[in-house]
Image 1 (cartoon, rainbow, N blue to C red):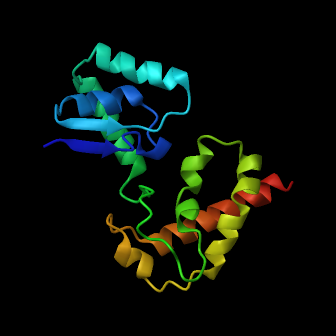
Image 2 (image 1 turned 180 degrees about the vertical axis):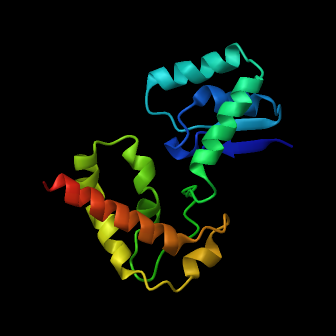
Length: 158
């Protein structure tokens, strides 16, 4: 029986495709299903499988550094926490800092406004936490992201 590895790049959170796919290549019964947004990405992934390489000690150090940077509080975007009865856009609210890597801060402030404003409706009932398979403290992360967003929005208003 095989295993399907959905979102092997963490839904865009992991930027090192070489490390992700080399890691998966160590497990012959794992089939990755990555999201692809360009032909270049397809070429890169195919190239990694055409010329597979084992992870080196340096690669493992890089993986540990990435893991440490992400911590244990990042959202995997599985969606099990949804829907929120209060209308909180949990998935978007949890992804703010990940999106910072891809969007200009001024554009991020505009594109994430509705999601961030929805966090104000959180009553910390705990339903999302109970549903989360990763045991994330969702209300805590949402509050932190909202504070970060407000600070970012304040800086972009100037």
